[in-house]
Length: 84
Image 1 (spheres, one colour):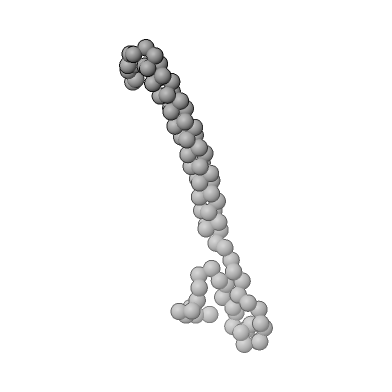
Image 2 (tube, rainbow, N blue to C red):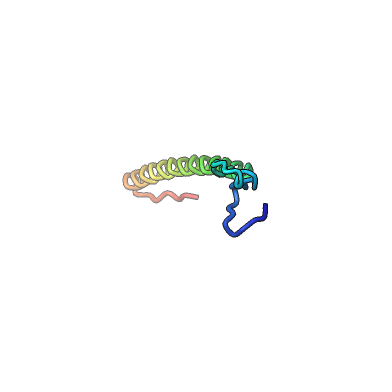
């Protein structure tokens, strides 16, 4: 069967005997294996990125607590502590 402008990637071609024979089956939608693997990889990467974002949020919270404690200590002692 020759390809035409109406052909869509991912759809199976209907055999000529089915078209001429009056069989009313619809084309079967197929998901390419490469696309499925890529989507799974993207899902895993997204999960990893979300975990890293949560870790960074916790680090930001901890850093804020340390800075607050440092400011409190400086207010009490009147000395500025250097941070590296």
